[in-house]
Amino acid sequence: MVIAVNTRLLIHDRLEGIGRFAHETLRILTRDHPEHQFIFIFDRKFSDEFVYSDNVLPVTGFPQARHPLLWYAFFEMMVPAIINKHKAGLFLSPDGWLSLRSDVKSLPVIHDLNFFHLPGYIPWHIRQYYQYFFPKFVSKANRIATVSSFSKRDIVSLFHYDPGKIDVVYNGANECFKPVTEEVRHLIREKYTRSCPFFLSVGLIHPRKNVTGLIKAFDGFRKSSESNVKLLIVGSKKWWTNDMQSALDAAAFRDEIIFTGRLPDEDLRMITASALALVYVSHFEGFGIPMLEAMYCDTPVVASKITALTEVGGDAVLYADPSSVESIKAAMLSMYRNSDLRLNLVEKARIQRAQFSWKRTSELLWESIVKCSGLQG
Image (cartoon, rainbow, N blue to C red):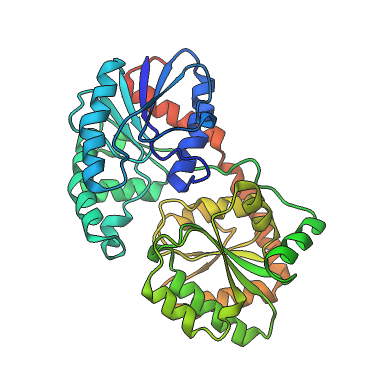
């Protein structure tokens, strides 16, 4: 069978959560199924690193789909033309976007519906596009894959989609995420935090990630702990807001908050494995890959007790209320002061993390493809 795939988020050195999902699953899936042809549809010049095997044919369409009008042009004109040209039998879309003008069977991966629950965090023109087109994408889909049981329930609740046609394909963690030696920890702390221990935050800096609350909680932590612990924030400032800047300007310990920007996987792995703890206190998540990466690094986790994060973290995470600065601060204090707590969470995480791997994700996604397309295994 010929399978067309939306690969517009496979961008060299710029893999965010959904791009990471696409990269890891397609890398394994295409190699495991050499009997099928995969047409990768890019919206810009692609990197050869994403042509994983001989059965992958990369095609560059246009325009670059980075604005609602360009999204429409790309998915409603370019994508159906490419699908028809290559006589694809299935369109797989790892970011959830579909082409409403194509009659081919369609399988979107819908990671979460945060734009329906927290619309104020998204610019007006983007929010309007999402809220108008995503119900149509769901209606168009022959089957849906999603990354957590929480998101599956959310899709059913909001769109009344048949739950029997939604497959949960949990995320995994890159194999490079693993513990490091004490010597590496020392070098990382020397490089980034003036040899001090640090809490870590990872992800695109966006209002949904609760950066404002984290800054305020860390400032309160430092005022209460009399420690030299820093806060290291890794991620692009693309969605930096006035509220975030105001919280940073008002923080007494703002000089102890360090922003690194985006980092390569290997650097991120060593930083994650060197942290005192990951603090992941988003307002909404469909999964939470940084939590899993920390678990694989034997780094304890503080996370929001919301949406899919409790599903991923189980009893291996110290939870906080993301809407309460005091709750986040208290969790950070507990994590800093209680070494037995940290060790206990790491032990539990070694059990919890075994449920998730990119190999298993790719297998589950293939099962969804088989069900959607009518293939025989």
